[in-house]
Length: 177
Image (cartoon, rainbow, N blue to C red; front, side):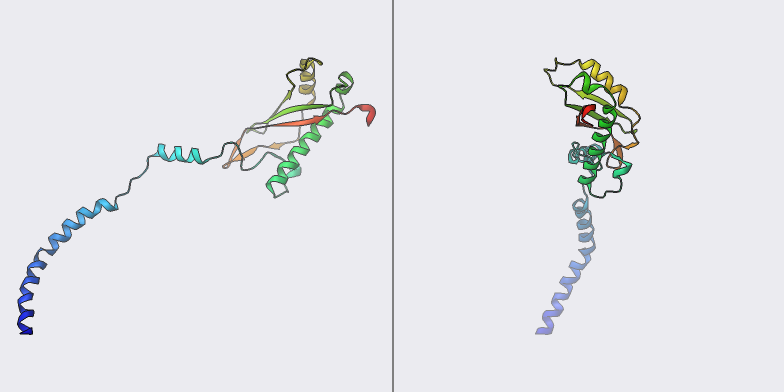
């Protein structure tokens, strides 16, 4: 009896097997849509990448040759700011700025470092700075703040970028030296 049951099942299995390739073809074509992935457009990828970039920070700060040896990012930045403030102070010490304006002890200078390694200096005066001639001070600064050593521009994602920062520069009197 057991043998008879197996034989009766065999024709049934053969009928199923005849239609099995057709079943596989239908299954294959229907399953292709599950493997299909949406490819984002270039604009979407660009917008996503632009949103992920922090535009307020750079990967590498501007630097001068003396600070290139320093590996730590913050220490290299501090070295650069100190070196720039020192160079500006030295260039302004040879002038009569402290004699013309004895009440002026510190000038804030906005320094712009362009991607082509050029620099621009702009004095930043308080809104109530009527006590001294800002145009004259500006012209003195532009005349003195030339011939700086080579400055490497800041780097953002491997590309040189423009950076701006404000340095407080202490004006010293000649008699104090």
